[in-house]
Image (tube, rainbow, N blue to C red; front, side, top):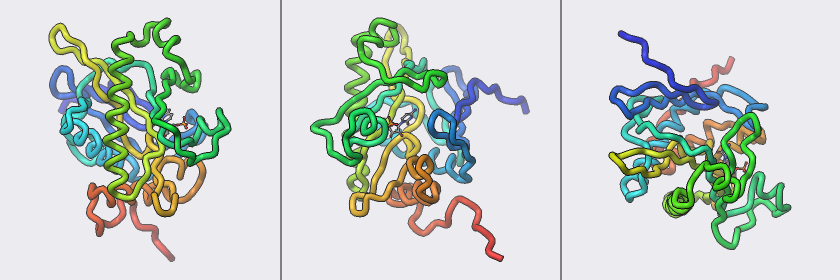
Length: 253
Ligand code: C5P
């Protein structure tokens, strides 16, 4: 069998050429990184969980008419997606202050924001994905004004969808990051949601206890990341409530 062509390897995923033109196979690794890869580890089972969770969120979005790159899940770690031309922005939506916004503006983590706030970061690891304004985006031609209108509308629709889905299972959507990409249908270009939506790219807090169920567990050494992601998956019914953990059991002597 011919070896498939690797197109790109990132911190948490590998992209391979897909079976049809315009498709890509997205492979979810177990690698976890934080603080622009200053902190690194391999968390067994994380890739499997994120593949399932991203499938769940993206197919839900497709069903309500928010276009995403997701086509279908292929196996435990891979999904077939549409090839896109990535817009070099990380689009962050915040409902409650946390993380860099709390640091930057001195707002206590968990403070509800008066309305969802959308921020843009320029996607460049060597610069640490700096926060940019719409002025930078327009001046440097990263996206047009029409693109920005579409990106804002997509981001807010994703926020409404994800907030509702999470609230129904007792989880508060504090913030999240999405990426968008361009696809061309004949002469027309449209923007769709790309990359992944998973607890790696969201802040998710239990509504009752405030327990963190997202990548902050890894960033801040708060316990087992797979336990946190498994809890999210179980509540959403993505994994049966009775299923055994994805990680191998620890042998006790
Ligand atoms: O770090 P910060 O507070 O700006 O992150 C806001 C949200 O965006 C968090 O949910 C975080 O997980 C996500 N994010 C991400 N990838 C980045 C930066 C932030 O998924 N490179």
